[in-house]
Image 1: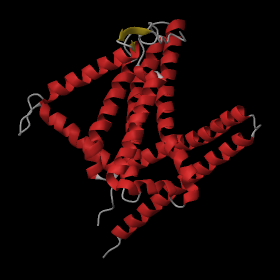
Image 2: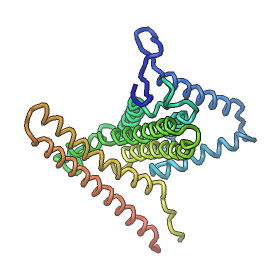
Image 3: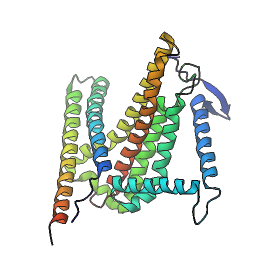
Image 4: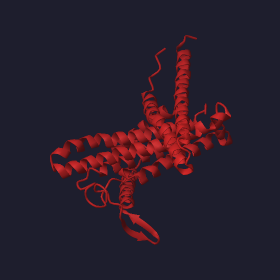
Length: 227
Length: 83
């Protein structure tokens, strides 16, 4: 156990060990699934009430990703993935604000563990290249040797840097924030950590936005006409 | 003709992306080189080569983004010119 972080296995599903992070992620997935079900079960052709708000958010999301990716077609194709990233990371980050998080064994926000952020960054990595191949076919491989074949190692290094920077940024920010809150709770419980927890609300949202924006940018670059 | 709306989302993304990606490529080159030096007992050879490769990649990334912005600015200027 390091600074309240616990990596124990809760139970086994056959040969697969299931730890607290996986269970927390299941809870987040359940929250998102139930929210999506409730939000869409009474949809009508002519929207009324809450459906107006949901449709406004979806339209804003499409417009926003179209701006970032410079293509409406790509934005519509990848908006569901990117929006899910945003919501998943946001709820994960905010789960650290629930009383007890980071200083009770087995209760920590999933994004404060690098295994989770690596997994999220790898999804982006594969989405980028699947998007690139689906738009350009085999010609997509050509961008690795642009402007000339000698640039291959540089281009490969650039591709590897994307998931690394996504991973380290998200993990570092959330882990650091949780550690500081845990230390402050230990040293001066109840009052002092409150200010930092207020800051965490903002930081959690910023990190979710940054991860989503950068993923959108990488996908947009891989699928762009000039690539 | 009305001026083209500033694409703030794209500019913000580019700024965020450049900062961390430049640090990441240099870190990968440097630590990758250090690992290779430890593995093959080659002193500082791969560390220096890795750092140079990382720095060169960072320069290329900056150059690419600069050229991209230049192309966009030229296209915007052409769009704004009276036909």
